[in-house]
Length: 390
Image (cartoon, rainbow, N blue to C red; front, side):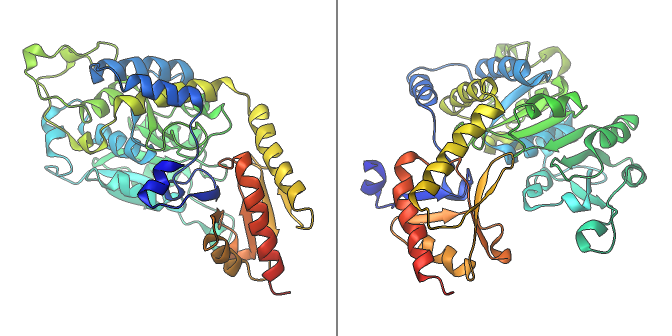
């Protein structure tokens, strides 16, 4: 496109998937049109977030929801809500707190670099469990009793990173948390599809769930969703909105913010760093409606068709097909890491999924591939096969 060439930025072929590092995927024409229209008028952002809450609540089954600037922003805002509640003075302190440092319990095997967003709210992560099943020392991981044993008066929440292999189950963690009056914050950034997860995590009892908007939902790359309990969502949005106005002039939408529950108007909060623009918010809502309306089967058929078209262009390449939630092609190479570098250094550069380079395989993810990309991708793959040592 002209805008990138004008800036001197070369375009790439994204065979990795909707990763922020490679700028994510593409917006549907309806999403682009909605964002363009939103950019031409002004609205009260609290009213717009209240409208978003109605849409998100209808689709997820949550009491309330807001649009965030990504799943990590949702984790930050959600943690801040668990720490501060509806106390404006507490909100103003974050990430500093008086008294004992707040603690969030997390299963050790679920730790990852994205929980930095949780720690940024001023909490200390308390790890539980020994993941013997990952270390090769046994079959056990954390168990519910270990979470219960780690709870102290300083505990404000339990963080749960959702995946098909997470242990204990979310239901077990929710049972422990709710027995002790604690909320469960779920990192579900990449847990779509299936589309059923939009409701399943809330239905399982999660108090807050953070989704990415720029992955499978195909919304703006810098967007996300935080949904869950109304009081916690209220705290989260209070720490996010621009509140530079007088108390008596402030008339927030009642479905999102109950003014009568507050002793006064909070100052700009920790979440002001996560400001959401009207264009991003509207684009995310349109993309969410589109995603929720499409079946998982239809979505997978589209992705499989893309992979079939690629295979037809390079019949000499011996791919194996991974029929997973997101189907992928795997290609075994004797020097997979060097092949990955060669693809990235090509023209156009090709970025593949590098998660199995250590196993001697490169993976092709179809979710961010366009039909126009396929001939160049086929040529690049053909080249590395020709130049790959036997």
